[in-house]
Image (cartoon, rainbow, N blue to C red; front, side, top):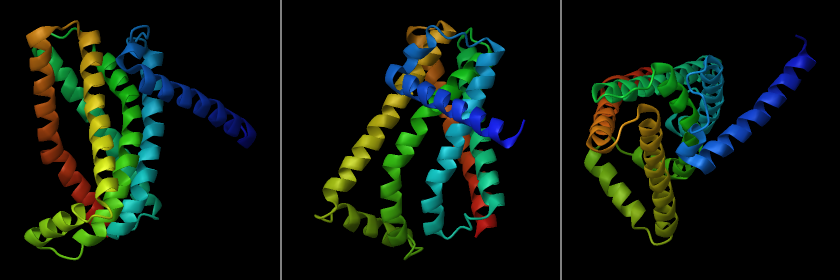
Length: 231
């Protein structure tokens, strides 16, 4: 495959990616009603879809990384950040799969992973809404290592009359989209696991708790290692 063929392939792949992204965002869990998640080709396409989402995620993190002082321009940092991001997302999908299995879920692992891969479509919009908040707050937070001083800075920042409306608007939009993502995830998992009522609520709650532990015990330490290496 020569360079021209590679460019043509990527062009077609990106068009397919954008169509898939739009379908997931607009249809939510309904997009999976007529999709065979047990098909190996669906899983492969889902992983490729998540890879593109991961690339976008790494790009969106660059401004924040620059503010923190990370050597974001190094290829090693970008590649490590992408690999870590994709690995963590796969980890989240496995946790939700196991939590569904505990309460009698019927989905196969490949179905849950494929489904979660497509649902990462929500992450770039959420990150874009949070980006201005992070870019605005990080310089203030870096002025002091004292947690009490940082909280005072945040308090003063939030209640600054000139920026209050912008801050609240972005916060509400990002929070609302995050809640909507979890609603779609809940309905999507319910769809493929044939669960209803208390069992579904219990399984999903267990998954949320599992992800919370995973983030604090694995995700945060790994991010700290990556960030410290890039300082």
